[in-house]
Amino acid sequence: MLSPIRIVSKAAEFAAHRHTGERRKARPDEPYINHLAEVANILAEVTDGADAELVAAGWLHDTVEDELATRAELVSEFGDRIAALVDEVTDDMSLPQAKRRQKQVEDAPHKSPGAKLIKIADKISNVRARIHSDPTAEQRNELAAYTIWAEQVVAGCRGGNAALDRMFDDTVKLARSRP
Image (cartoon, rainbow, N blue to C red; front, side, top):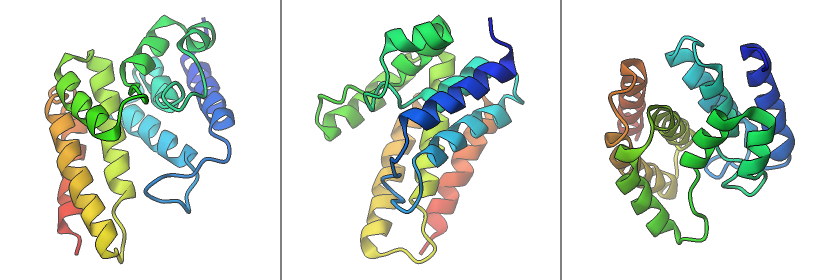
């Protein structure tokens, strides 16, 4: 069994190697690993670092969805719980985007407590990425639409961590205060 710091470090390294060269969708000037680092850091912050496996799952949450790893590989490298958390937050990419988004809203209330925290942290990071200092009309529209959808997903995930819920609410307020 790896120590807590070692499991987080190993997950960060694994994610960095698997996502090499990827860029963020909402911020193409930024490496994708920044999103994973932000999600993991949010989880570490709101849990005061008490759950290393949750933080590691934050680093890894997109590896299966982006077809960069398999669930079996995550079980082998990181154990059952981390693989299960990643699996639980992984979208079925064979579905069209509208269906995937609707499924996230419908499935959110039925997720495990840890998966709900990852979903909220992911939405915080993704809303923040869509906030631009001098947005175009397209960027403003994308931020508004994404924020509305994120609120619907998060509505089914709330209640597991008050600090995380407040962080999401503060992020939405910031998004809505932008021109």
